[in-house]
Amino acid sequence: MTKVITYGTFDLFHQGHYRLLERAKALGDYLIVGVTTESFDKARGKLNVIDPLMTRIENVRKTGFADKIIIEESPGQKFSDIKKYGIDIFTVGSDWRGKFDYLKDYCKVVYLERTKDVSSTMLREQKRHIQRIGVIGTGRITNRFMPEATRVSGVNPQGVYNPHRASAERFAEKWSVRVYDTQEALFDDVDLVYIAAPHQYHYAYAKNALEHGKHVLCEKPMALKKAQAEELYALARKQGVILMEGIKTCYCPCFHKLLGIVMSGRIGQVRNIEACFTKLENPASRELTDRRFGGSLRELGSYVLMPVLKIFGLDYEDVRFESIDDENGIDQFTKVSFRYKNGFATATCGLGVKADGRLLISGTTGYIVVPAPWWLMSYFEIHREDPNDIERYSEPYLGPGLRYEISEFLHRLDKNADAQEQSLMEKESIALAELMETFGRVHPPKAAEEDK
Image (cartoon, rainbow, N blue to C red):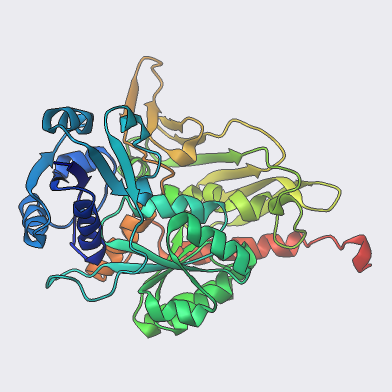
């Protein structure tokens, strides 16, 4: 008798789950299914699990495929279960390809291709709906987004659109999703659209998706002009859908904790903020070759500007931009200086200069320092006059952090709620677009020789 084992959360049970169990059963004669506990899901970074454990177990049982159902509640249990039950084949979905190759010394490992389409009709009557995601763009961020989506319950990547068909096909093959030839075809099959194309296309893609009645999660910068951002949010309200700008740091637990502490007055009145984000980018990259839409501020500025606007607000008295450009007029290093009624702030970003990427918030009774890389925030300290008086705080920052964006987006969908105060709000998103527009005026693109 060939024994097969598989594991999963099986939350909001749908056709993809059913088909995976069906194919797992077909691999052998006896199927054992491990269902994860809530605590184990949380520990491994799975967010937004909806159904309680007993409901998920019952949904697996109803399929009739499982000969035995067990509970997975700790790391390392898979190895123990394989030995305990004399397993011949271990199988999971292709989202985990390569992750469990270490088990090949003990049994055969099979990765089952994920179901490319999850219809809006679930296999059981549900109060919650699986949000089918359509992806626009196939670059670095979308390749980070896809595995992150599997860490959030209630979403399923459905397909991808890229005007460059070959890029879309490679992406679809890698992540087992459908390719769509037009945006409209994609919109017909999805509930929400995730946009991570080059910056200059964000506004047009977002507008088209909203006009088709789709929820939109758009990576930063969502718009490069204030009027564009205002138009998009107005359109979302008119259509009765959710629009959210993705700046992952703004949605992570540690940043929320930091904001709570700052706003509670634990360091007195804030007088100065210094935020820095730099990296050494490939000189041949789009960010350092695109004269109109490349450069440090458009690429990294949203991160360093965001904490300034969150803490000090939007009513700055003055803002100044200083840049060091390369020979093509593209800013390799930019410093944005703010003057508020009772404070100062500097937001520094660079693609051709390396600096200490920390966040410093200075108050009248103490200061907060978040060590580099602060935008992947998991730890910070409060310091006071006494050098021995240090408070330390930490929260996990899981994976690339995009799961926090997705989780916040689902919160807004489920609750039909406005942004949480700690998260990026509409007025702040519009203010970011206005700053991008102001930078474009004071730092116009340098014409290429062939354009002169």
